[in-house]
Image (cartoon, rainbow, N blue to C red; front, side):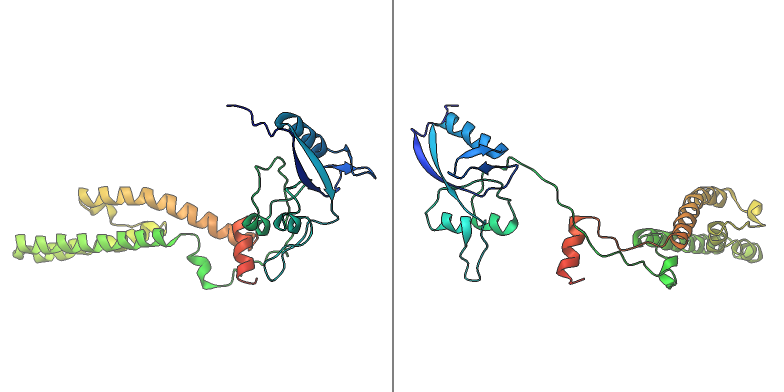
Length: 245
């Protein structure tokens, strides 16, 4: 790519003395600062000269949309470039064409202490799981009921004379057994079930181990160390400001 040659063009450059970025002497000449050296490098590389115009403030936006200070001079066409640690904030970014930033800084926001969530509310018992998990648990018990009902009707259709045996088998209701396993309670007649039911509840028992351990760990941690509404991301800070919190 061919280097841009500005043919010794003179630019009016607005500067705001802000060490260590730039420092000027009483004659308006750059004597120190990283941006002062950067300006000299740009002058030599692109072959242009600068007339430094010193300002005491960057300026702010008025209610009528105009700008004051150094930024206002750019809009008034009395200055070509604004230099020396001009921060790229949103209000300026909307109206001004910035070059690619050459300095990145970090800002810290101080907020009020976070409010602790109450642990005395009833929703503390449903908070460990999201709604999708509760929906899946409810759907599982619904499938247990449907499966048991279909099996019961098929048995009646197959042999009406063995109603007493069918009724005895129906006492092993899948939902009843599933609730026992979910709460880590033993079921006395589980050995008398058929192989299909045993296979179902072996899988369900493995699932309940994961569910109960996660639920108890989450619930006990919330009781021991109540959660708080800390603002620890920019998105939370924006939401809090917009909701006037």
